[in-house]
Image 1 (cartoon, helix red, strand yellow):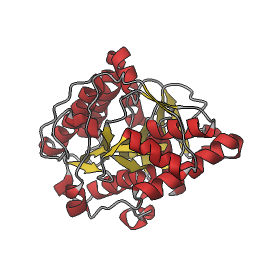
Image 2 (tube, one colour):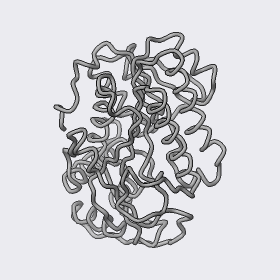
Image 3 (cartoon, helix red, strand yellow):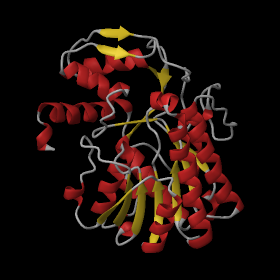
Length: 333
């Protein structure tokens, strides 16, 4: 972990709004902020029993507000009642298939919520740092590697939703001078991800349970990745830097391991690390998804001094250890 990129003392005693707290990234952020002594406010739509976000384990420094993140009154009340000094906006529909079946909720969760938060900051809390989690999917289908200066060309509803909140955040940062920045990251992976449709946790689960690994693509799609602990450092680093560096306001940054690995090769790598072979079933029924994806992180390396602490092999091995423990003794975590 590159702790030199994040100053834990900066976060002590700060009130931080984390949206999407029951999600993979959001849950990790809550844990880290509480460890650093922050007061955390979260917005939770509903219960997710299989989530690292368990209020009874977090204690009184974590406040939970129940409701929809795109409810205008809810967002206004949050800024009325709490001295929020940073917002880590991770709430979104994380399932690309669900974005096809429920596009309206997909758009509202990403776009409306972002607009409401940014307006509260613009009109009432202009010193509040905001980091908006966009995605490498916002680039849409275009030549790789994706670079920040490229125009966003999304097609899929998930891609369009992420690109919309991305551009909105850039606008508020550049036009209104607000401390807002955007992250476009490769696919997150690591412990506590219970979306078993994702390739890494799904593959590990299948191997542990001695089942075939089922791919929704033909296995030849390529993806770029980022280990979750690097992703947490990125969020906190950017929020901290925004409070003092006007040059990055309204900027979007790519973060990834800068590797493009075919999904079928990734499954084989995981199998090798787990010391076994596995049956791979290719469905090839992925709908409207980008085929080739890799992001270039030059801008983050040069402007922010960033580099990942985990390479792909090190991160996969750590992830496999975590899931093996969880799947064999889930109550121990």
